[in-house]
Length: 267
Image (cartoon, rainbow, N blue to C red; front, side, top):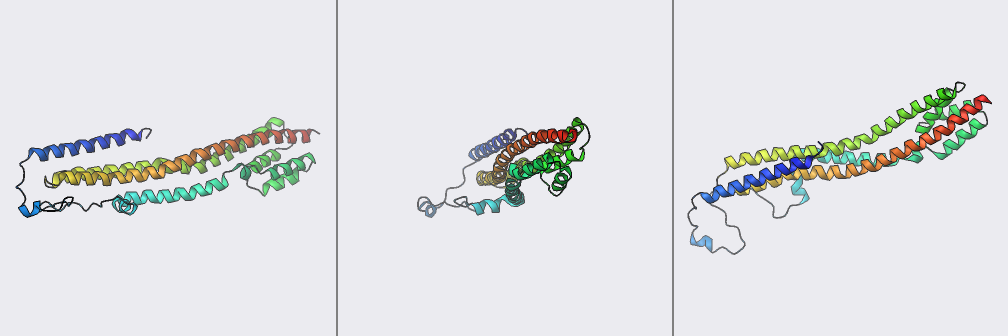
């Protein structure tokens, strides 16, 4: 969904329209009988309960625990996705780095071995490693003795596979950032359905209160989805920049190794 804000705006507009309609309906109805004189003597600021009406128990101040209790199952699922996104963020920040995928010590050692003519030793060293650059160098060494373009094509093919693997790793965080707002929207739609049904079932005296309570409860899941999605999307774009830099560094190093392997085979 490219423009979820439009859907959110429509839902809020519908909620405000329904609440305004309920108030207009309540105003048009006959005024209920006046309360006894004792009720009028209640201290200022104390709410006078309507006879026979038990409004929803709404906390005077919205707290985090209240939001979690009112959010329901969808909010719990969203919170679980947020926890999973946190763990995934820590893992990706530690593993998706240029130093991890293109370690300078490995590059220097492989260059020294190839310049010394020890292609087998360089291949064996890369065989024992799992960094992206080691896989690319190994693919080029495997084609040693062939034409330069064959070596380059083998290294480029291995580099494409490594780049795809990196993009796949960071895409999970992007998926969380996309799904969390949709879950929040689902919870809001469900809450709005309950709000509209409560209008038809409740008495005229508490329709406005029930509507306001149900709408506020429905918006909790949307807020939870955005709280999860915004940091996840920010971290995804940061890691996206890292992946681009890693791929650029691997391509630069691969070009040098293509020349080294081709020159060593010709000499």
